[in-house]
Image: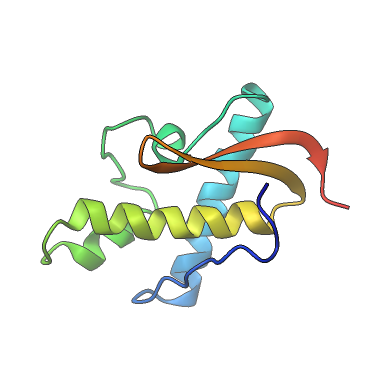
Length: 115
């Protein structure tokens, strides 16, 4: 279970409004997942279409652009996106389970709201 005490790292290098755009985008993806696949586990990878790194024309592309001239920009952008997703899940009004599997963090809505 994800608790309020779980550590969420702050993503730096973007403006607050850019981070908020990413949060809003990911929140929408989480809402769609929970509506259509209620009891299924998901990760950032699942929300964004599998292993295809296609973030063009989404707020997530800002994370890639932040690292484009660095070593392994896709991996670094993915980690930042994962931290932002964890923040979205932690602040959501619903309750989620979490686990680490297949070298990634996964979440599942419990069907309950946080009290």
